[in-house]
Length: 111
Image (cartoon, rainbow, N blue to C red; front, side, top):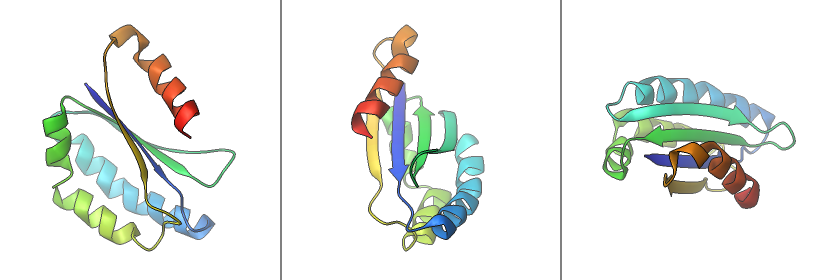
C-alpha cells in the first residue's frame, strides 16, 4: 500500500476556499479510480495549509492517477493559488498495525 501526504499552502484564505472547491471534483473522481483506497482533504487548525491524504494499492496505480484528466485539471486550476509548490511525501506501508502511528509521526516530523 502507498500513502501520499501532499501539503498545499494557499496564498490566502480566499485561495484556500477556491482550492477546496476545486478539490471536490478531484476527490470524487479519484475515489472512483481502480486501486484507490482513500482520498481525503484536511485543513490545519493552526496555520493556513491543506493536507491531502491518499492511499493507493501500488505505486503503479498512483503513477496512473497522476496522468488522469481530473488530476491535471486540478493542477491547472490551482496553479496561481499556492504560495509555494506542494510538499509531497510518498510512503510505502511496511507494517499494517503501525500504519496510522507511522503516518502521524511522519506528518509531525515533516510538517
